[in-house]
Amino acid sequence: MVVDLRKRTCTCRFWQLTGMPCMHAISCMQDKNDKRAEEYCHEWLTMEAYRKTYAFHVNPVKGQDLWEKTGRPTLVSPPIKPKPGRPTKNRRKDKDEEGSGSKTRMKRKYNPI
Image (tube, rainbow, N blue to C red; front, side, top):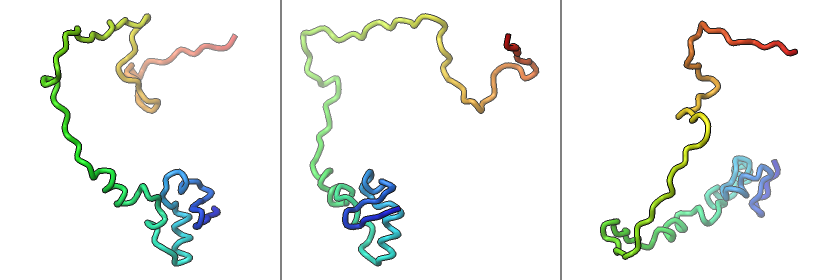
């Protein structure tokens, strides 16, 4: 892989996508005895950015019983229409799971005509 520490890029594109240096870039940094890997991370991934994000206080929302009452009728969801055909099973089994039928039963084989 080709790593450019000045542009902060690597051909595996992990560094560009996540903002964190990939293993190729970290090995280059260790080879050059350059800065620590944390110094090459994107500024959004620093503790300072985290503290700025959560510095303000968020007040809780009042409960539903304390909401303001209006004269309008309450919203009603549309009725649920059953789909045509046989309803699907609640859970679809994986390919590697065993079937629920008996194991002694053989399947039919159709020969091509």
